[in-house]
Image 1 (spheres, helix red, strand yellow):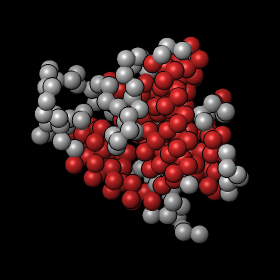
Image 2 (cartoon, rainbow, N blue to C red; image 1 turned 90 degrees about the vertical axis):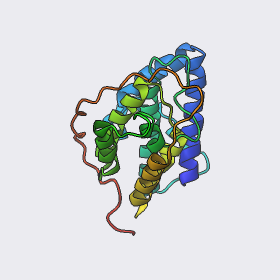
Image 3 (cartoon, one colour; image 1 turned 120 degrees about the horizontal axis):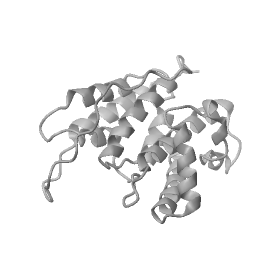
Image 4 (tube, rainbow, N blue to C red; image 1 turned 120 degrees about the vertical axis):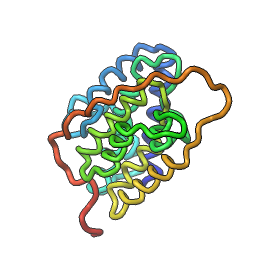
Length: 219
């Protein structure tokens, strides 16, 4: 199921990205609408039903109610966060394979040093215990990445958002994010002027819909 989620999100976002970078009016309009859902859950934005690529999840048959809920939430979050990330970035795609969240966040910081406000935002995302909280906190991080045009692998993010809803899955996702954060090393070539510093003001409050992020039992 995780592969299906990653494929559905990745293919849909790649098509949106191609259209946006080619300045197709349909893709530009779609991303403008999808941005309204960034940081929210599918049930909070019924205006976006049918616009986030979740139909691809049902191509091979019917999902169980539990799998459908988890998969749709993961794809919806990935697609809408990508729409926010790509806003006004007409010369570069913000969806890029192989860039995990931890490494992308580390790139926001000076080489060899930690930016404490950014680190705290990353920790807040990693310690979210509901889908609503994680959606809101990821939106804050994506806004920072967008400001300095740091891309992210949204197929991988969708996979991890699905995995995090499985028993013990959130712990594994946290480990992966932390590992990619600590393992990132800046490229040595092509050094130029430092990127503009992102805004590090306090993020907005947690979204109002408080849905359990990971199941409490394994049944």
